Length: 151
Image (cartoon, rainbow, N blue to C red; front, side, top):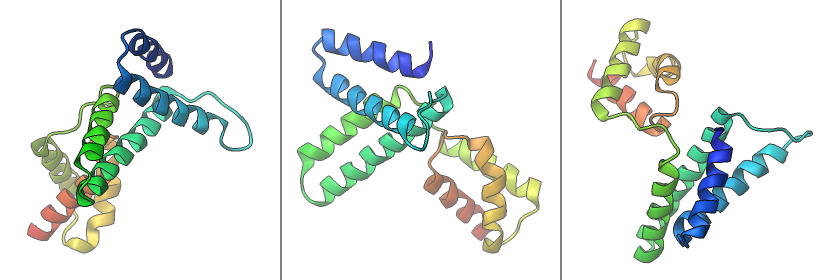
């Protein structure tokens, strides 16, 4: 079953179970997918990988909104954003643990022979395909910076 079809089936299930949080989150995600499909000159059907990209973007928006609401002292809205992020996380690949990320970065540094902070772009280019959406870019960049600064 394609990811978009799974989202639609889960939306139907959530509506039948009167699970408002899941239903509204999946509606929002499917709207974002549809918007992406009709963007550009010609409508198209997104591949599962493209749907995952849209879901990652929506999950990131939820994390950023939760942080903004926390900073503004709006705990109830921040909690809602976090809960929506958890619903979206069910459809995303598992995130890398810190140790796994450190290992991948160390391997990329060894592979490229990079040394010093000026080689950050070179290491990022080598490590991004291996990470492939299982860790946020900022997290990857932080680990690369940490290892290059120490090494």
